Length: 303
Ligand code: NCD
Image (cartoon, rainbow, N blue to C red; front, side, top):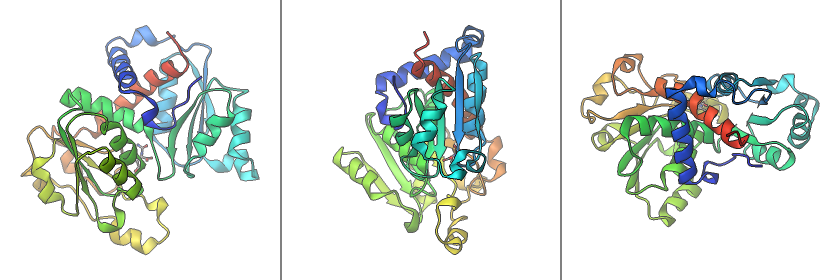
């Protein structure tokens, strides 16, 4: 029995397999409509979510399965002091697979060590978010057709942005990928991730200037400043609007750039960009559902 806590637990071959399954689901949805009949997904969300929880639930329904769960910690026994380990043991009696989001880094890992069913990390604090990476990878493959030979700009909150951490890890395994890390100095990528890039000989540069980086980018991954991870409200208010992508700022961008954002967007991307064919953030939303369907099938070992 396997869980998915960190994106690197999937080999690149397994990622290809999931991406191929997602492509096939898009082409032939009826083939998959009964694959999970009689199976139950538990969504244990101790933190707010729109896309991740609803896409997991939609994914399970589209596979013919059922869903149970909670969407806030205060409606679960966590509010009475129950541990994540005990919750995982209990939910293992009711469901076949768990998707868990938690504000504490490592909580889904603890759940997976105590559950008797697969656990999927649906976001743990400012650490990782592997299933958003699955959505990002399907979008990149469908739009750009490759993972090699890409210059990828990450812009905004690279410190707390868990989607950034997981996508950098995933892309680090391909050839000739360069990262441009665009953030204010207060929100730079954590040192432990930069150390991994350096050890693997992967090229990256750090800058605070989005405009200067723009012309070389094949992918621009915008992020929200993660208000809920700040200790200091004043600092959040000072940093939240550091980068606002407007149509003029794309004047010197490549014509085949793709603009990604895990969403929710606050101010980072002007709505005027939505009409630009390079804007792919709503594609990511739909692709996330297909990749979660593929992942559920894999972890439940459904043929
Ligand atoms: C992201 C998250 O929860 O980390 N959202 C998502 O799952 N698509 C990004 C964010 O909240 O900024």
